[in-house]
Image 1 (cartoon, rainbow, N blue to C red):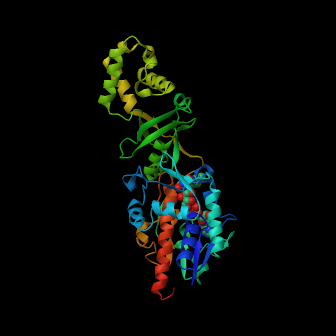
Image 2: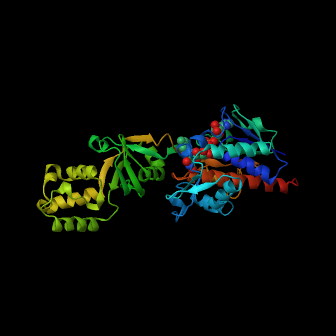
Image 3: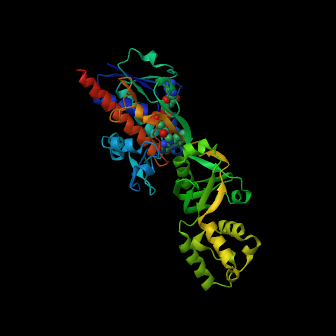
Length: 392
Ligand SMILES: Cc1cc2nc3c(=O)[nH]c(=O)nc-3n(C[C@H](O)[C@H](O)[C@H](O)COP(=O)(O)OP(=O)(O)OC[C@H]3O[C@@H](n4cnc5c(N)ncnc54)[C@H](O)[C@@H]3O)c2cc1C
């Protein structure tokens, strides 16, 4: 029996290797349109490949998979992050878990993963046809099984319902010279949100020369990917710089007033905010009165300061890539596949795995984990389909 895998990326290789391990007699061919396989793995995680996550900080999969969390929960029963971790370690790739729960090869080099995949492909005699773009599944008519692992935004040839692909995981351009002058400033724990919507995200925020970046922005871009696209990346943005509610902020400012009435506002910073950011925020809230002493703040000014600390408003003016990284929100509709096997509901023996599906995660190794989990599921489904056909 023969299986064609369309796409020589993370999902394609993981599927091919597992399929050969499960049914060694299967002939497996990977078709890759470009000259090079595993190109994204090579550049992933800044060349280090953040290959999964410990999930220790994840209480609900919807936090990390804005699209596809229910399906991921179901498929994790078969192959989850612990299985992925063991899979690599059992094949000699030592992994390390960072303090932020991201998992990398101990070598800190994506080539460790690539070399493993290429060695396993050789060992299992998997055919790899590079420079071979599949434009229609009719080209693969003499294969018993087809698995499409073509990555984001590339499902058109499969003839299945597709949710329009749009980018996810990007940073925000903001036209605010005074803000952008603070480039390089990091605030460790902020909450960002899009007013009037339920989208909000917490984490570190980095001010850049074009606007804002960092996990609190990337997560928000992922949660609101489709709405941002629909609004042409022009939407309001609000930042809570303190991650606290108004009364708590008011109390902190009152305490400063009580203990340091004579000090200038610029010299005492609440919540340990970076000094240049504090100056920017006080000038935004108080204008020239920002040079005053704490005791001179009147009630109205105090309220303005509280408001800017927890509800600072901006206008998103466009999107920018994060170190060229983005994943695709959208792809093959999950309603078009059997959720247990990822086989097309319309066309038997046609399967999908990886980013081509309408599953995507936030940064932190979650996207590769989705590739491993879905690819493993398909390998298992093809194997069981084959044994049902009386072939082993
Ligand atoms: C710069 C960057 C860094 C990233 N870093 C991380 C990270 O550290 N951790 C993480 O979890 N995720 C990361 N991601 C996301 C991750 O790389 C993807 O989610 C993952 O590669 C998806 O795997 P895939 O096999 O589904 O698709 P891909 O890796 O995109 O592979 C699809 C392959 O199919 C081929 N193909 C497409 N159409 C055809 C066709 N018609 N015929 C033949 N071949 C075709 C493509 O050329 C490609 O090689 C990163 C993404 C980028 C862009």
